[in-house]
Image (tube, rainbow, N blue to C red; front, top):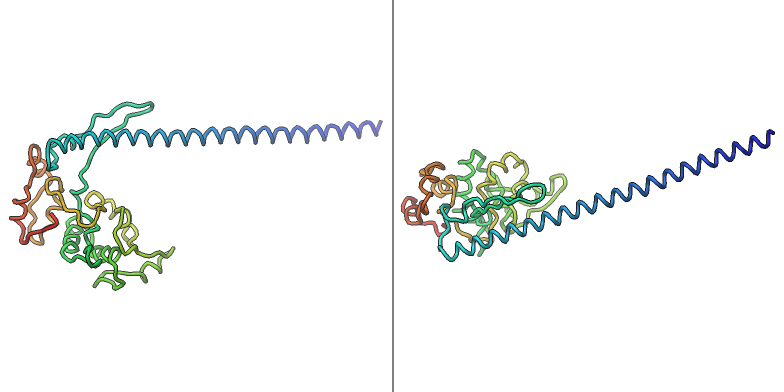
Length: 262
């Protein structure tokens, strides 16, 4: 009797172990399947979003081609600048809009393409833009040193390699043109709040790209002059309902110097 009871106890223990193993294996198979399903859904969603983006780009390209045939000058009263009607997709809407990036201050113009050193006129304009936006002018010197080819800090607020190699983690400035305005965040202490203020007014375009005065906001236009603050956002919006404003001639006549980069 005792031997038989011990055998039953061992059989019960083996059955429990087997049940536990089967449960673990079943859960592992279920979890792997659920994870693979979720991964496939995520990949499909990303691809779907990418294709929607390509569709939006194609729609914008058609609008720009039509605009090129109709006009050689871009201003906000044209068809391309009006919001596109949203079109519905499964689970939401897709909206497409165009913005003239030449309306913004081009950070890469801070550097002279011939020498690789600072363009002082443009640096002065950037300081004025910072001040108009309520930001410290010192960031102009730091941005110049982030872009320029030399290793000498710009006086009085610049910084070169030693400033960045002491950061955590350490890094180095590119000493050349940038492709994203988010590189402003690499300037020690610049921070996300300052970036949110300046982001709508700056761009990272090829060196030498000029400003389109027909679409530039009041802040960018006013930064062209050291003494004159003549533009207001509401006034610009009213004047631009049917034409380019200000015209290049009107703007240049109001400035103390002839700005070739406009």
